Length: 546
Image 1: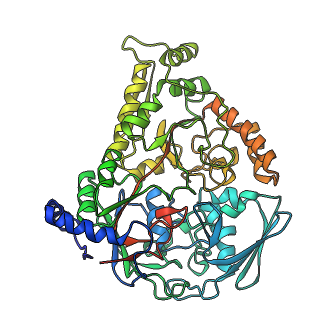
Image 2: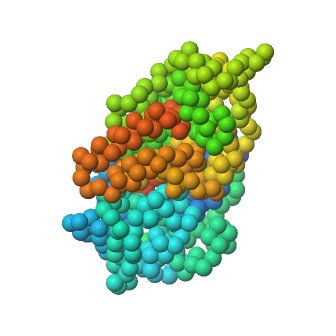
Image 3: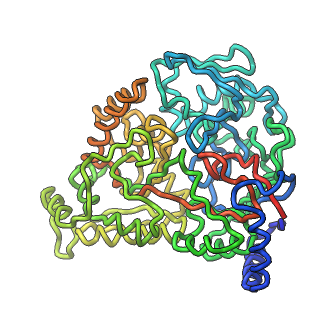
């Protein structure tokens, strides 16, 4: 059943009523039979056209233009409208998207992409190689957190014809093949953005991409609607008539909406982690744990390395020793995470766990703070700092409260600032913070998703999710640069192992969790998670059964 959602309050009211109806034993039995026939991930029947998918969105992004906003929420929303040249399988191998095929020269210096010849922008203009050149050479390096690192490796980019793009690199860069999924390199329309102020272009209010769905309407604070793109470059797709992203700030209401069938998908932190085990038992819900292979999310407590006392690695080490990360994993995130050893997620290539470890040890923490001269005052406080919250869900707010309490035990007094997510991200990007929380993603290779957070050249005020802690170490810069350019896998491992050892000693940030998000899907929806990008992919193959 597909609902027309015009008012969130009415939507939530109807969701609550529907949730109550699910309590009927007769309905549960009937639903269980129907949904068992529908299957959990494999196709129950040939895909049918039609239907609108309703997806939870919380919190609401500040803008939907993916080049300008790569928060996790917008990485869910915008790839339905925008496209990248490639997507990636569960095994992280590249798959076609706007690029139908590609070639890499034996020396690793030349990448040639052959583009779909029938792709159009949502305003009807043709998509061509000129758009790829503009996007990767001009726009993204200025406004996108990862793109500057990726495309700084390019010596030249040219278009021998309207449907071929050739990138010639300065040196080998094996991670370059991972730079082209939609959120890393969303193709942007040259005819709309060339010569403009990208961040203030009037077109930002109505995004124009090449994706399977076109922007239709955004009722701020309520709902984002997209409709089927009839000119999508993949014949016969998408199957859905549209997708709606429904803004539901309250966690309990999100759960009711999912259980009742008013929404069909919850991902990331939409559902509190302690509610996921119960969702697994519901016949109308499939809980999927695949779909984050490409992202490999890593959450940390970021400390502004340019502000005292956080400019001293002893303070940052003291923070690590003060936090019980196993408690965070088990009692706050209910086991849906792993405790990291450093800057590279353990599922990512070139991870090395042979590094210094930081188990909970408040005596070591206090000793380091004493050594710095940060003595406790009469009130027991050594230093006062501010912490930007993560106002996404109750789980994240519990993490904020835990960190406040844990640091208070070693004499670090933390004031939690009152701000929404957009303000928190802006403040982080502008380096206007003491401490904040960041979740970053690896994107297939440390050269693409890890280096950007620690190399000096990526300290870019005004651009979130760059090196916003402002850590700088010339040796780390050298190692990341050498590893990015090497075609020798064993040499890359050696370089990345050394960089992990240095970073774990310097602790530019306090690594907290390797997250393992659960994706909760109404069983009416099929082929939702089909690649290593999970819910951040295009949904062009999702279809709905009655």
